[in-house]
Length: 157
Image (cartoon, rainbow, N blue to C red; front, top):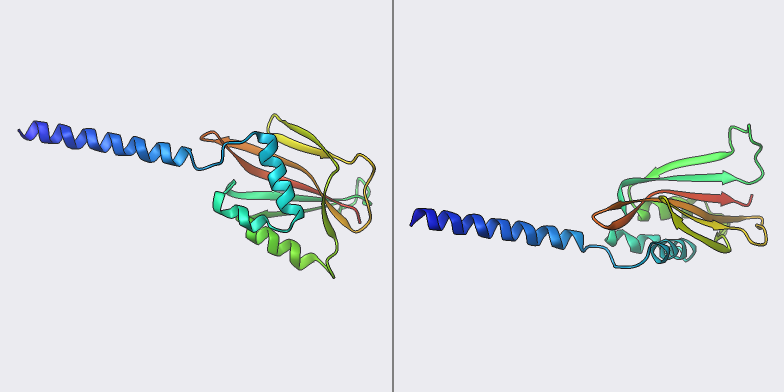
């Protein structure tokens, strides 16, 4: 009798562990990588990145790299780098850097696509002064869900 009870408890534990794992794997929305990347870029432009924190599309922290378009190749101030633990903190950091709404947030005009861990946008007709362009992001996959590793912005200076 004790053996049957122990077997029943063990079976129930295995079943519940499997159910929890399935629930954890289905945390992200089912969409293509391109649609996922465009959603991130649109949230950046709309200044609503903090709303994405509930989905947690990053693992621990993600990296930010801003390139200044007018800086020379050897200029020590060519890149600004940062690391953030949430999109809300990233959003706050970007907002603190703004003066009267500038630099304005834009996404490069042409979405090239996602492959090999990177999603890219390109400028079709150039860039404008006082704009901060969403240019590229790198991603990884965890349990079938993409997550942000790095975001690359271009400062139109």
